[in-house]
Image (cartoon, rainbow, N blue to C red; front, side, top):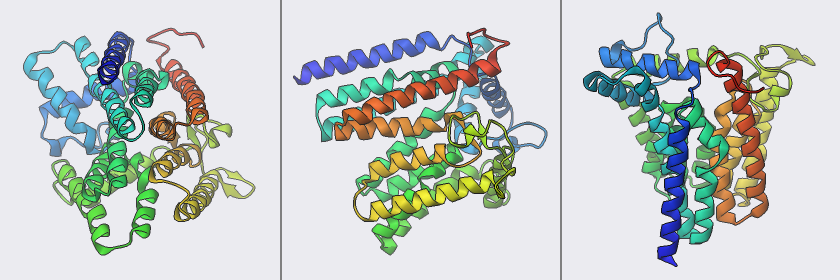
Length: 363
């Protein structure tokens, strides 16, 4: 039984790798992959402290820039041609796809059964939205989600220092990891001890400072916060192509526009606040596990506020597959499949809309 299960898992992983390696030859999302390319070159030619500049578009926090710096270094010393380098830029996300699958496979196998673990692995590695995000688009949501996933698994197992460090790195990769912040806050209230507070805050803040310092050696905290606020301020709209609640109003509609004397931004804030009050009630009544709360945290962050990109749903899909597998809930997994397909359509819409000059696809 164990040998058969191992054989199946190896076959699934190999097929997952093959599918991704075939699809990476499709053009990436031009805006993003061109940014990765330019930033990697810039990082290989400058000190980290010189990277950020008002003269060029650099809206990412330092986390992923370390990966691009390494890739840029390899391009420089190995004389990698540009067309090959574009493919190489997709590799970190592809690798994290596989690591996420293996993490969830291991957890589900340990807690439920090898058969359910294999199903979870298939649902992740052959999920159309997951494949599209990394292999075709070239985005890095799998890298962010990997650190968010480890954050939650460590928290569930009461490894608070590890959870804090992983959460700090996730925030530096993409600040939308803040979706998990209310969950961490509720956990601390529920397990209120000074030692827990220190373990779950200090290591994360320390790792953020250590990783941000080379990019912002002068006044690190202020400049990092200012950079994040400036980036968030660049997108004052209802929905940035996301098929979510405020996307119904329209994409790229200014979120300071009023509806019944309330701005769309305030409507989003009110809905999101009520949502978390309800979640808090159920969590403290012990009717929600940490894993269920992680699902609801990431879903709520995608569906309710303004300024949301279409790709923010990625983390929720991974957590949903994980939770559905742990609960052995066929309905939840089926609905996750439907949501994955709708998310795939959302990604496809944006990809075609912006990439049409490079690659003709049916609308």
